[in-house]
Image (cartoon, rainbow, N blue to C red; front, side, top):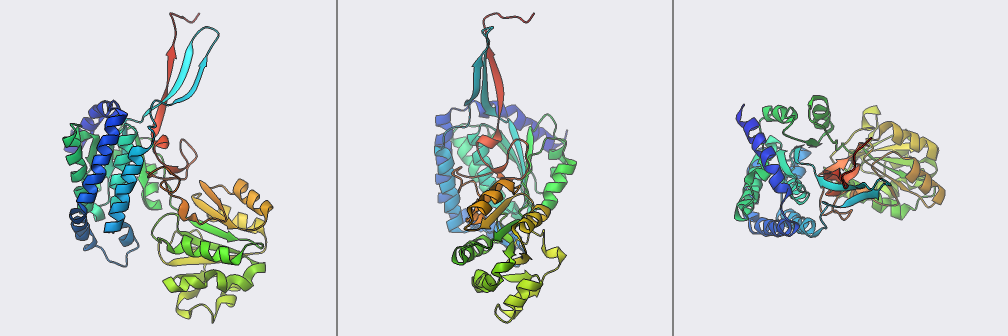
Length: 416
């Protein structure tokens, strides 16, 4: 057994102890971690700079990798929020007593050991540990090599806090950055209960195709906003700008604006503000004609098939013009990754049809897709955004990373 397998075995052995920690103790530890993170801002930023220095600043992953003082303080605040949330454990999900006197109680319990594979997102290291710990599970983390120094610095802080509170350090295990470690994790049947990949479509596909451990997918975000024939142009312009530019490297960022052809005259007003952020637009023929000589020429291009169904993760987006609402629905169905989709409309029938007919984890009516986030949903933080339909869908937080069991109480009953 190699060293990684030995460490995984130690985590699996420690997981029952993690599950038995009292809720009061968990809260105390997480508040202590929040304080530790805030006091170590310079230490974390120093490690993060070592990672940033190895990456091209033009790489779309650069923004995801970058930590700032404000981002670290926001993470610390998220830790406090999770600490103060109600426990997701020992919740009665269902209960009934049969005529034979047997009492059945379906109760929430920890997963056990959760493996999380992610890319250049050092904030995930803290989010993942905090959520898993609050939900009573040990966790195994496999971060990308791009964030190696940042992840090590964060894990060192977590280990210090665990040690100070006499909690087994095996509650958290950071795998080595080498790719070979991923293969060991994917084959850790009996040692890891579930694996959650968080990152690009390529990473998610690789994990799904190669894991022998059950997988909960968190999908890439190919995100659309449909501006309807009845849409409010001022409302739409703000939603489009926010969804596209708030943070371009995140999975809830806008990729394609779908525009009803009867509103082509409003195309410039809808996207004009994007030029202040140098957003490159790939426009279809109809929208290109309306934007030509009005939107900056250096930022306006003709679209091609490759610009639909693409998660840009950059200051880029495409425009698709449609004749009808039904055509918009068909376009979304063809190209969506089933992550987040939004409609801008003043027609109640359109809004209801969109909310009911669009197949995505989160659907919005007159709202920016930037809200697809565990914190914004009141969950404190998130493991990721699940785009599958088994077990969990949408922002995955405390409830979504627990399992359940049936407790059956009786008084000597036997089955005839």
